[in-house]
Image (tube, rainbow, N blue to C red; front, side, top):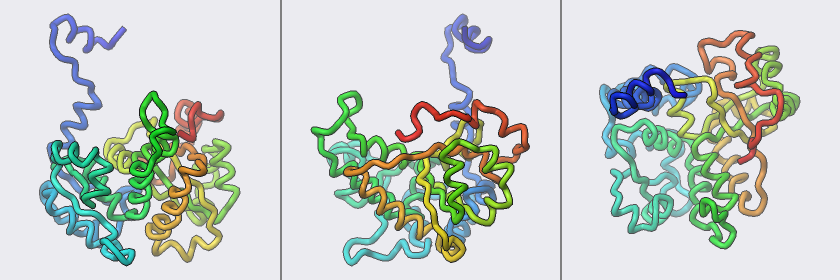
Amino acid sequence: MGSWTTRQARAEKVPVVHFARLKRQQRDLRFDVEWLDTEPFVDFAPEFKARVRHSSDWPPVEAYDELVSVVRGVAASWGGPALTPRFVPFDRDAVREAGGYEAHVARCRAVPTRPKNWHDFFNMAAWAHFPRVRWALNGIHIRAVKAEADPRNGRTPAQNRAAHFDESGMVVVSSDASVLTELQGLQFKRVFWQRRETLARTTRFVLVGHGSMESLLTPHLGLAAKALLVHEPDIGERTDRMHEFVDELAAARIEEWPQRLEPLYPIPMLGIPGWYAKQCEALYDDTRYFPTRRWREHSA
C-alpha cells in the first residue's frame, strides 16, 4: 500500500509528485552558497569558493570557464590542449551529432551543461578540481571495446565502474593502514566514532563524484560513496595539495581499469566526522546505514 497522500492522489486522479523530487525542484529555484561552509566543500580551492560566494544568482553557463580557471593548476596543459574543457550550454542535437555525451566531451573538448542545475554545477566543480580523473573516466567510455559490453546495458565492466565513480566516487587517503583495513571490514562505528581523533590526524576523505556532491545539499541517511582506499605515509606533506595529489593518483589507477578492475568500497558519507550535523554514538548503531556485513554490491 502507498502512503495516504499517494492513495488520495490516485482517488482524485491527480499526478503524484515524489517529495524528494519536489524538494530538489524547490532547491533548484534559487542559488545559495551556505554549502560552501560545510564538509566536504570547505576543501574546495579558496579562489573557487571566493568567486562562487560572490554570486548573487545562478552563474550562467558561459561563466563556468572562468570559475574553473581560478583553481590552481587547472589552466596548465599536458604539452597539448588545455587540461580542462570548455563548458557550453546543453544542445541535444549537438550531443547526438557528436555520438553522445562522452563523445562530445572528447571530440569537442566541451562539456554540455544545463543552466541553473546543481548536478551540472557540481560536474563543473569536479572538472575544476579533478581534471585528470575526469579525462581518465571519459577515456574509458570513449575507448571501450563494444564486444566486451554487457548486453543488459551496453557497457563494459570498466564503463560501469567509471559511471559509478563519476557520480559517487571518493578517494580515502590515510597514513594509518589500520584505518583502511577497518573500512574494508565495515567497522564504521570504530573508525568514525571510536577513532575520531586518530581519523582527524591521519585520514582525508576526498569526494570526487559530482552526483554525491549534489546529494549532500539535502543529506539523508543512505548516502554512500564508492571509494578508492589509498595508504599514504606522508599525508602531512600532501595536505596543502590534496586535490592535486588525489587527481594524479586516482587518474593513474582509473586508466588501469580496462585491464584490471579494483574494488571500490562503500563509505556512508554522513558517518564521516563533520559531514552531518546529527552525529551521535547511536547513529552508528543503525545497521541499515552502517552495515556490519558486506553490502551486496560494494565494487560495482
